[in-house]
Length: 202
Image 1 (cartoon, rainbow, N blue to C red):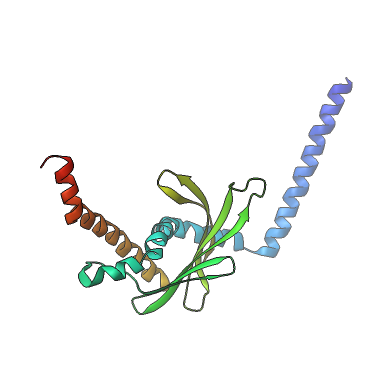
Image 2: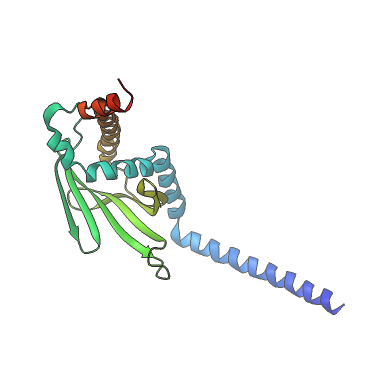
């Protein structure tokens, strides 16, 4: 009987707490308006445009863009010009021009698990305008494999829709085309062809 009474008290407590939490959420929702719902809509739009994936896929190529410049005018696709890389405090900044507009990609560690020197960390990857204003940012987790370090998207932290999205999507498509072009050029590189001939007795 005593155990049954305690169980009943626990259920009553849970119901009372649930009611208080519902009341709290209603009060906060009245104060906040529809901001959380609008944020979810923005995130849904960003997901539909695959902005997180596109940002991750453009970071490494833009980081190595000086090698494109060295390749000369022979490239079919040359997405960025005037690339400049610098470090400000804990932030790596890659500034570049695209279609007469200046943008930057910024990478900054925002969390690290201090218990393990090589352990988990969270990095903020941002796409910014000429004034350094963040237009889109995603938190990512670095992951190491046999091919090196890659980033896995976690959550969208900033998304301010605007005309920049057109440039961003164009840049993403051009970088994807450039990656394919570099693969094609590597496949038919004279040194690579000689290596294949030697290794396969051709």
